[in-house]
Length: 159
Length: 431
Image (cartoon, rainbow over all chains, first blue to last red; front, top):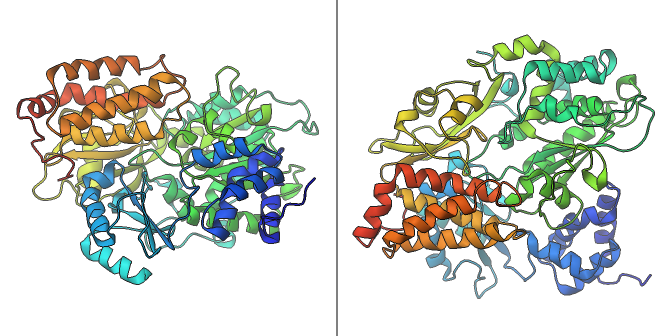
């Protein structure tokens, strides 16, 4: 087997540790992609090839997995990733307005990254915090009861 | 009023450590099950208790488990698996998060007893990627249990072995469908599988597998501790036990509470959720998440249980209600839901993959004042085309629930969009 050079020793160790939980190593594919993303921010073609080799999958099959799940980024993202919930309870509580404010403040649309590489803005589905709507994830951390004041504060804190 | 599932959970309480959980009576049920009971005793107990699945479908848990082939001798080592569905993604649902963040050991104890009953020596908790705090707390609880001999080999000297692994996912609602979940757990795209064979016979890697929701498993230790008669006595109606109910939308006090199954809808909304916010009136509600059919004011005195809500033409679902108020456009709300379902379709079967985006498109046209009267028929036709029996799994039929019921209860709102060539609420804005 060719030596896998595009993954770090830490990445390989963490992926192998996950793979040991299952009858077949492929079961660790999603967690493996998330491990790569944790270190590199996103999952490149080279990473897909290397992880596929490690888990004994074809790169095409692993890419099918990588592109199916929406928390796996196959393109670079900004330093901070903002994910605004657009599902029903947040919609009733005004997430459209929050989204417009975010887009205006950042000067980008959903799916885009600011020119300075600071922020990527994405929509996300229901976060299971509907009693605190509207909500968003800021680098994975839940922020609740969003309004214009709160957004200004959040963006200022992330710079 | 007893609240067994949330006895250790409160706004000011932090999740109990193993020591604290044990001090409150924790792991007594696991001890009793593993040392004093056989699989068939526990199975019979769950069937007598009439525990029904809390993930949405309400399938009787004991019956589900009874389809798993049992080995005569526990020394037989052909693998079986227990999978806990912690992929809480039903829009408007926030109950499993409460249970996992509030009392992780309760879920672990439920898993130990359930896996022992099913003779499974490996269990996976399949948890959505965004629930990082839940995953961390569960991993911490598992580590504590391993240290104290509550997980691993020869648990409590019972000769039963069990390992639990937390599997974090990466999004996609379809992972909540049990066969799609199994494909996802195997590291594949989460498309559903044909049934039969059912997972109880051929599931994860072709092995006998049971998939149950978090809240379902959390009930198991309490039933073992207190018995079937006690469990049935917890509810107000014929469906047994308590339920985590929730309310979101424009109410004064949105939240989740453990209440007897069969608590009237009105009581949940008015007493616990504090009633509607000032200036807002209730027009309708989805009783148990985004894929349940709308009910209206005339249903407020119904009991929140599987049977009563089912008879009224909807489903208890996850038991977490979403309120439609009089300042929110019903067409816009349905459009929002169908956008979710169209986006989350796995694309495996044609009616779902192609039908849902078309439904979303038509509803968007309504919101922009471009709806036509013929579109009403197109929408109604889709509720049949994408209904039960025409698709590979329950995703599209679930998506048609709110649409079909909205077309019946809020028909005049759809028609007003057509006649006035605009959305009376100003499209897209929630209020």
